[in-house]
Image (cartoon, rainbow, N blue to C red; front, side, top):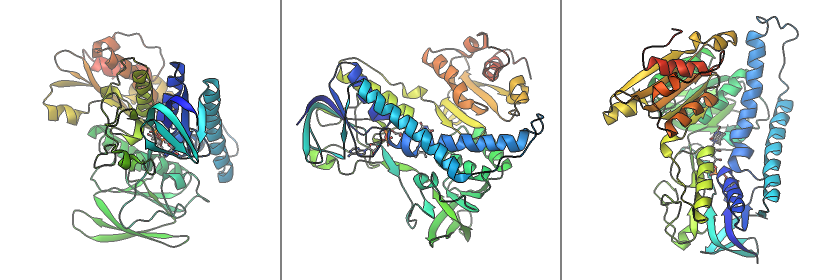
Length: 462
Ligand code: FAD
């Protein structure tokens, strides 16, 4: 039996970051992970493998769409799917191996196996029981399905199966027009699949700023993705090689079917806390299966904390990481704070979509007076040179004080551009602060500055 100050259960971005921060703060730390490699959903079956496939297929698209115009001639690339998957797997192992290295460097013990908490202060892994003053639950989430839809990870797949299909499907139906479904749907579209997205609501990505969401759908449709909105999937009947998806249109209750070689079910994720023994311990869980915590990530049972996808809030790796650091710092006696008003979200499609802060719809609902500064990437020289003029930057600022309230970007490198605005918001900046900051030319970032100028006397290049 080993004794620790902290045992973290789960090694995803919440758990591994928390464990490293605990160790950096001088706490004797172990991390329990049942999976064969560290890094959780994010590194093994989430953020990282999906971005590898997005990158590879964006390169393919770039070659097919723009090389000839730039005078780059030669044989067009063809797809070696096995090799593309091997590249994705190498990317995963480089990253998971990196976490193992960081654990060794920070003297964190990896307790291999599935952890259970028999009582506060104790964690069992296999036949061994370890003690810890503090236990952090960072067990993440798992895909959730729909009634009548059984996932076999071969024909009817979750995102996990979609990252390692045996072959590229001719026809793919994506159930759910959220981030994961659209990212992976656009991967297969670029690989040549016919992709149809069925969404229950009347818009895709419903929490996004509505203007951006409309533009996003238009651009994806231009790339060939088909959308059936306002449709409730009734069932999926699958054989070993094919599936038939039955859905009803909500507007008239009419029933329709679609055939597919692969059905990707991307209807959301739910917290994963199976086998931990939380119910026996009396740890409070919400109706949505999230572990309830206070703002220091303490559960109602002393010495047990929870972070990441297993608790409330957006299911994002960087949100889990921030909570992991804050939880560790709180245990070490510091007074950390996660600002949930400034957590960026990004869709890594082409073009990317990113946002932070409030949407126009939220501001209207709250009755807040605001002004909008918008700038199209068509007016940005770098974007034009790089075939990336689709999209815009939209900045929302308080009508009187000019303080930035939100930003929504659809366009090249949107996922990186958003951080300038995150930093500005953390400092309580006004749109004018960004407008008066010199931005290098020619960069995509100039579009952010122009949107800030549009909140004042007007942009220069439109
Ligand atoms: P997880 O990463 O889920 O890790 C939990 C770990 O705990 C797992 O490894 C699990 O094996 C382990 N575990 C569970 N129970 C036990 C137990 N009893 N004992 C031992 N180990 C246990 N987010 C982004 O921010 N950006 C993205 O681009 C992005 N892309 C995504 C793409 C896909 C396809 C998916 C599925 C998700 C994506 N996400 C993305 C979401 C992101 O992966 C999660 O928000 C993040 O991984 C949550 O981190 P976590 O530490 O809470 O849990």
